Length: 250
Ligand code: BJW
Ligand code: ZN
Image 1 (cartoon, protein in one colour):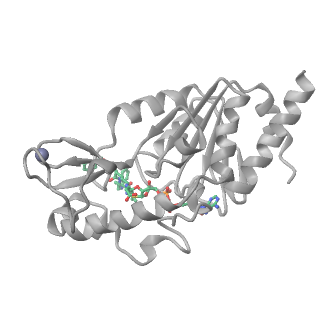
Image 2 (cartoon, rainbow, N blue to C red):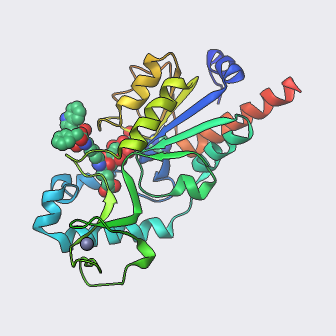
């Protein structure tokens, strides 16, 4: 794959890098995306599963759905795309990963600075008293587990529709986006807000925007460079370019 010259020049002088990632980065690890051809929401309705009222109406069903997804996540491994993003840390002092994913794969691949905009499937909390439970601490129950302190229902610590994003994660993401030189937007349909404001604010602050996706998205229009391809193939090739740049600089 031959990359655009302008992009390689930007890569050469960049100091601060942001990756904004979505479900597509984990697709090659075997974790289904939400939208698109094989997206889970072709079969299941988000309004019945990914909002608080759905949980109150049918907590056992929603809990079981998350247990099912947790199992898929536990059986999966980070792929070449996650590892390539972690490899950027060898070339830049400032690499921030802002992810909409709840799957922990960036952490498992070795990325150090990660902001999670939509929560993390390994954490859970009581809807009544707010006590947190990491997944291994929870007893295996049939249906939704109950809080040891107050008996309330325990839910996954993920962000459902109509819910606020974790404020600290959002604020720090916005700050990193506004300060970066290159913002890579990887494997997201970029239709869910306010998360999708983050790369837009990077662009507005002067960052060079690179989109990596298997198809064009709502975001392609804003990107300085739109690379069509699988993240697990394209990202390692960019790391190869970094190796070449480093070799020339030495
Ligand atoms: C590959 C690939 C490969 C495949 N390589 N690429 C207008 C403005 C602002 C807000 C709104 C608005 N209208 C409605 C809203 C509200 C709503 C929203 O944005 N709705 C839109 C969908 C219309 N937003 C919210 O409700 C948010 N909260 C909020 O706004 O709070 C304020 C408020 C408070 C009170 C009342 C009202 C408002 C919260 C959003 C929470 C989203 N939660 C989910 C579920 C998380 C938990 C879980 O996992 O179960 O987050 S929804 C789901 O979508 C998940 C994802 O993080 C998120 C984004 O999806 P993503 O990652 O982009 O995945 P896909 O599947 O869409 O795309 C995959 C892409 O990968 C595709 O492009 C493929 O082509 C590509 N791909 N393989 C590269 N190998
Ligand atoms: Zn409780």
